[in-house]
Amino acid sequence: MCREDLLASASAKPAIKIDLWRNLGLSLSLALTAMLVVFMAQNAAVSSYSIANLEKFEEETALSQDQINITLAEINYHSELASKTSMALSEAAAEGPSHLNQNLLMKEAESLKIDSGTGDVDILLDQVIF
Image (cartoon, rainbow, N blue to C red; front, side, top):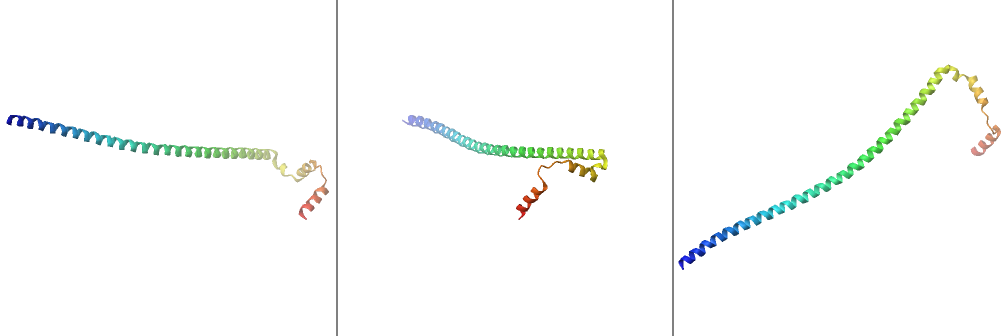
């Protein structure tokens, strides 16, 4: 009986060691699983944040593109205005000071044909004013 007790006690000790390793392995696997879940949740939060930043970036890009289009339209307008002004100045320089001649301006004004008489305009202006 003594021998059986020794064998029973010898077999009981390794069983405790095996349970200890199993418990340690189970605890380790649970801890790693918990860490994996935390990292996945953090990654999901960061990726949703980056998606929100991407939408904001797209809005800013659209707004800046609209601003660029407006600026290009303004540049084209000023360019056309400058070319027309340049053309008018070059024509005035080519013709000399004759474009400021009062007699020439009066002849051009007389050549314009106005359909209505001056009396009709005066009557209409008097009605509007009074």
